[in-house]
Image 1 (cartoon, one colour):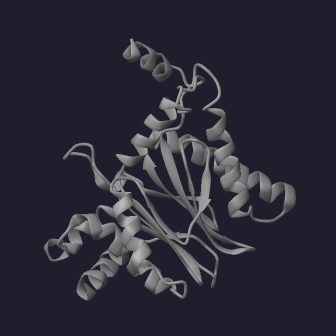
Image 2: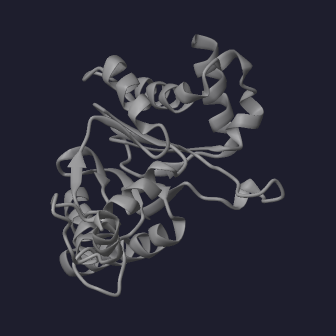
Length: 248
């Protein structure tokens, strides 16, 4: 009988369980936890996002997969979870960023954009006939408040971070970041820390081939010099990866 009752709460997004849980939201969060890892670190002079790509089949061209995407000139995002869901939210975020430029003649603030994304996510936890977005976004950029780093949750919640990770084995990486993060990190230190965190679940780093692994890693960064978010080419990612592996 208890199993039948539990299945009733399981099937409806609009019904709370007796414990106050929304199972469909929890399942969406679980989809995020199974997604490829993404790491973000905020420095005193910028923000870096790094993420790993995972091909669904050996014949897939990994260069066509995107882990880090541009929202506006000053904002980038990394994905963990369902990419189709992420595409919908990112398209909306890009439109909102352009509306802000046309309406106010200035770049949108990172927090305002994150709130808009999470408002959409929250609406999809309230109505029957829909499901929550099974994706978390790691949003980084620079606005009038300086470097900013946020995560968005399938429930519609968001948090600001100094350094964090989303996706598979993110708990392990967050513990690593907690131990090694320093408030006075510059961009070079932030990039090194983010890449080290991304490689942490891989175990022994001496066995990693930088050239091969760089094909599965994307790095995006923005600093206070030009305030433009840039996704690094493969050659720069490989050089950064070799530098991190040499130091480890």
